[in-house]
Image (cartoon, rainbow, N blue to C red):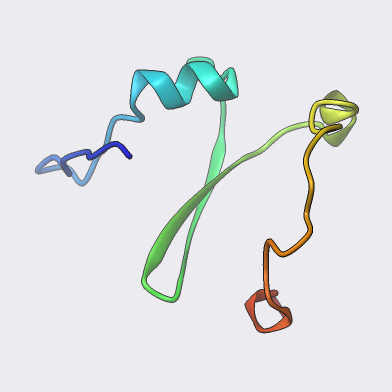
Length: 70
């Protein structure tokens, strides 16, 4: 788990390991939102580019029904 510091301008730097594992590049957009006091950042992009990327991902036991957005 990485720790980041919020700058006086309320900016944070995404750690290199996370940027590299996600393939984030400079200028890419992310959506930032808060849910239950947790800040989430989600990449904005073309869904078609993700085809096959998470083929081995199992969603079994990942979330409860209560955890879903309404």
